[in-house]
Image 1 (cartoon, rainbow, N blue to C red):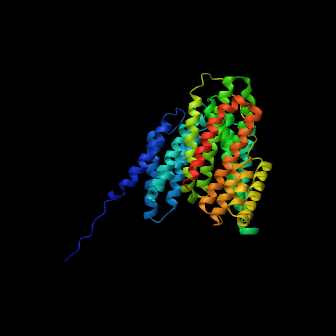
Image 2 (cartoon, helix red, strand yellow):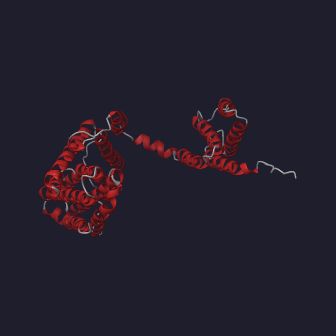
Image 3 (cartoon, rainbow, N blue to C red):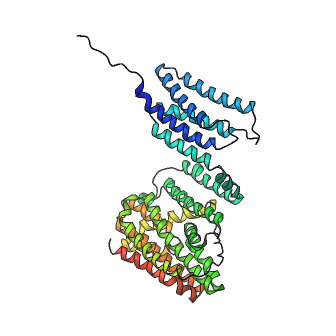
Length: 420
């Protein structure tokens, strides 16, 4: 009996072509809005389909040159269109040419089974094309200082970090140059984001944003600045108190984010402690915020560039010293030694002891409870130091506005520790 073989009519490839069509229409929709572009909705859709068709023919004929030839033809065609009919706006059309070539590549990518990646790239491409005015305005707002900060962060991340050895040294195998510098990069990157945003936004968006960004860069520096300016008037004292409280609450978020990145296993124990402190602190801050009836201009926090080499080296050295002291005293005196280091180091810098505790936890030299307790003690120590700054620089009027919020945060953190 003769067996009939199923015939393929090519319909099974239809989903890939429909995906390519959608990708082309998506990117082409944005280009259609640009009057200077020589390619629009139909052109981009056809180019995406051509990419998929060429990739199919290339794979079936085992001839990769077909795919390359199609790419060259698309590029040459659109360039010729711009040369033969220059735009009235003197637009060289490079963006549209690159977008068409990318669209062709995405169509080919769909045929090779990477549809999800192709769609994601298409959405990203359309977003970049659509937000051209915003991106141009962002680059024009960048000052020389901002560019230097970004370049310095690039040096810290892509020049210094890769050449450091990833190996444990010293007592307790606690010092790892690559890991230590990675912590420097992490802190510098987080601070840089707040530093640039702080200088871009200024005081246009009021106390909440200034407090948030100031807390990202340095809550201690923010407290110092607003403690000085709080003496000008009672309304300024209230505004300064709100900024200081928000900056201190951002520290709780910052420590949680650092823990999630460095040691996610400790989050289950850390979240109740940080979360209760944040909730109670926010309640007290909102109560104080509702009493404000003024929109006085706020001064900008005087913060230093967190990516400068000497600042990075200073934090790296502090991190290593705190790490070794914490490991040594924890081994020598148990919990009391570790908590003593957290108490002292937390007065000026919470990040170093936090990262050190997380590092020791990852090396199985600390339990989760010990690491969380050390972080909480460092935070409470830092709040005590900042409250001292408020009293001695801002005076008792500011201290009265801040006291309830600080007490609420401390109570929340302390209550969270009871659940460990």
